[in-house]
Amino acid sequence: MKYSRGVALSAIGAAVLAPLTTRAENAAQSATLRQPVWVTIDGEPEVGSLTYVYYVPEEQAQCARSTRVGERMVVDTDSNGELVGIELLDLDAATLRAAHHAAAMHGAAFPAYLVPVA
Image 1: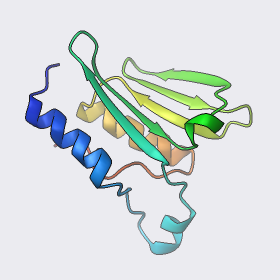
Image 2: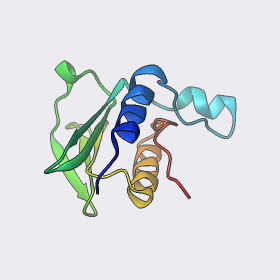
Image 3: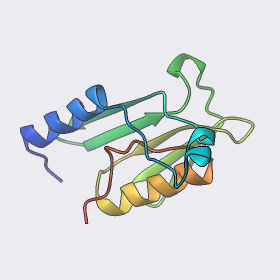
Image 4: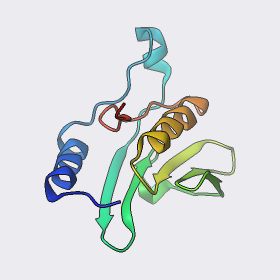
């Protein structure tokens, strides 16, 4: 999948300038969701879009297990089963929905600016 320069810059700008996360149904639930530390979005012509949502600082990330979820997503957890990060190999709607679901299953929020387009 190819992205225009404008789309790529918008995604990068959103990652840098708008570190918003999904909102839970109520404020109490939102407060308990684990927030992402940061997001990287890289686009390589031969590989495509590579996005990684970090839930711990990279220097502290001790990934014990990487679980491939479908063809376009990898969920990394530590030895205690805690979410370390989610790697997205594409930003299509199905992958983003799956990533939102995977984050929620681990009690974590997912960046609001990475939302599936209807």
